[in-house]
Length: 115
Length: 109
Image 1: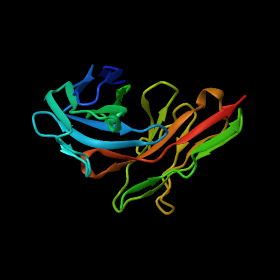
Image 2 (image 1 turned 60 degrees about the vertical axis):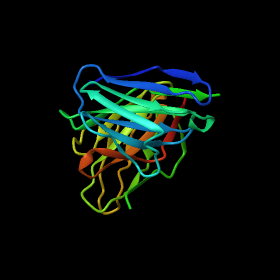
Image 3 (image 1 turned 120 degrees about the vertical axis):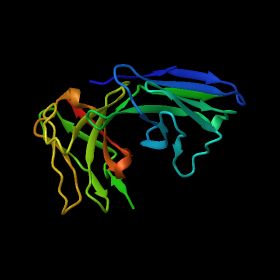
């Protein structure tokens, strides 16, 4: 099956700093990737859709200036959490749309802890 | 409004017992539904999708448009089936997914 990786798998940062999370499709090209947030013992909440070569589209209530998304190539999307605060601490998961099956394949997630 | 409801947070069964994880949806168009599974410390994996009508690891799910349900079933649960199960609805033509809140399945020996 299609494989999606995320880096880093976990990160701890100080309040006020920015953190970048990478999402890569390893064996297929993905023009569309998605970024989710998952709170403990809760479901996945879609934050934004990342489109290669164009601006990301954000879900209602998600601050685009806070969560910067760049999809510069067909295999890489990045999520940058700017000026992170403790309330941004969460599990961030990306997925890539494998158009051959019209199915999303998920990365392993990145745990962000903001001190 | 588009919504996916999984009424059970936890479902505990004994090994060999039948399992049914409930999923109901609300969607005005023609739905496309999925079941994803997340084993402990692993990523979310696609288990099955209704349009392929396949059985994966002994699990099946039938779309019931009249009851707006897509329940996941397995006749004989195994301990390795213990995991978090999410029902998801594809939202419009963008391939976005709406996830239910998830059901934790615990299969006891």
